[in-house]
Image (cartoon, rainbow, N blue to C red; front, side, top):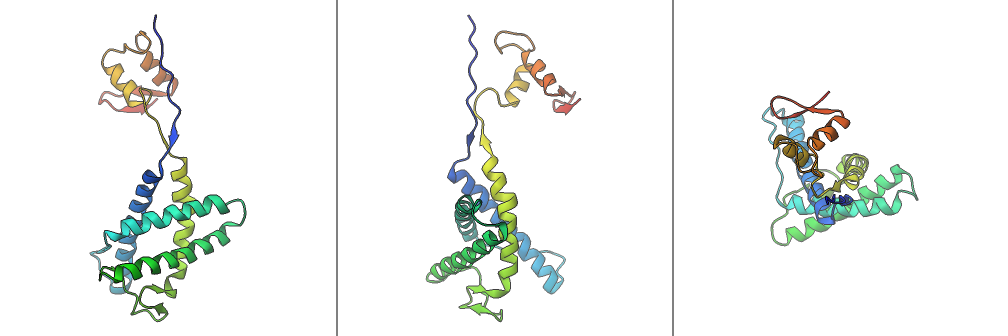
Length: 198
């Protein structure tokens, strides 16, 4: 008697997994922003983007807290007001983490050259960039990340493809069961081993 395993339901990403994605996003955006800034200010075609390893912790934690704000505020206030709240939080977080790192001579940024800076840790000139970044983070990063799911077990797509290559047996004792599932999805095998749409 052949029994088929019931596939486990996909589960949301853990807080640590989401923190990791947010940290990488912030790290990448800071490198790209500083590279673009260097080009605009100094017309440097080398696009040297710079950041600090501290940015991983700073951005990851900051955006994870913004995520919780989004979940609490999304049904209570419009997106523009939420982004203003995110921006104020970003200033508070930037000032707090910068002040802490400065105690160890480890703060990687200094806004002293900006006219409207405060203690060199935050500056009003960045209000619009932070607001735009907050909008992008909510609409594209947080909302998409919350939709991601872990899916463990044999029904992960690639396992079916591997079993087909090995003769097509093993799915309930039927031959080519994985191929039939692939065709039902509108997919077929290419000669180079990759899946292609029919």
